[in-house]
Amino acid sequence: MKVAISSDHGGNNLRKEITNLLTELDIEYIDYGPDADTSVDYPDYAVPVANDVVAGKVDRGILICGTGIGMSISANKVKGIRCALVHDVFSAKATRGHNDSNILAMGERVIGPGLAREIVSTWLETEFEGGRHERRINKMMELEKN
Ligand code: RB5
Image 1 (cartoon, helix red, strand yellow):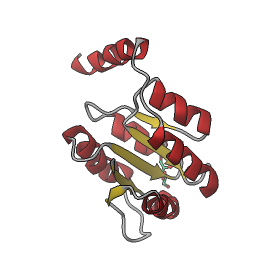
Image 2 (cartoon, protein in one colour):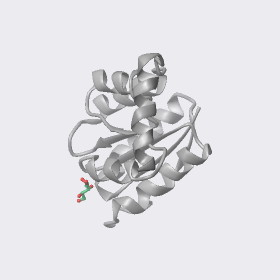
Image 3 (spheres, rainbow, N blue to C red):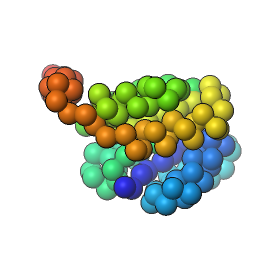
Image 4 (cartoon, protein in one colour):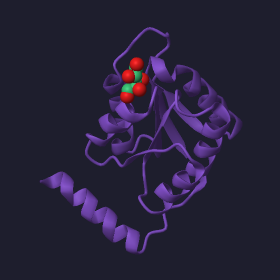
């Protein structure tokens, strides 16, 4: 398992928390920053992670901003991405099992680090269930062709 991660200035602290978690879990990651707390534009940081996921350079992506919303909208503009904005453990499990989400977005201003760690751990370890969910995902991905 290899992960790409980035944030904007609103997600910097939580990104550091999550990279610490990835290290603890012995999961390899690419961290696209930003290095400083200066204001940046979230699409600029969402795209490198999304591109790495689509290219197969990494297995999954994690994006963090203040709310997670800007990051998730940006990532979902990239063809092949299924980015889920998640702030609870139930949804973290469900979006892997049912949507085969390949990017997780979270908001640092929405949840605390403890819950975010549980969400990430759950999301990383949950397998896609396939079956009827496969058909629905295929229909979703067809929408990109229109
Ligand atoms: C930055 O202030 C904030 O707008 C951003 O982090 C994010 O919440 C946008 O969706």
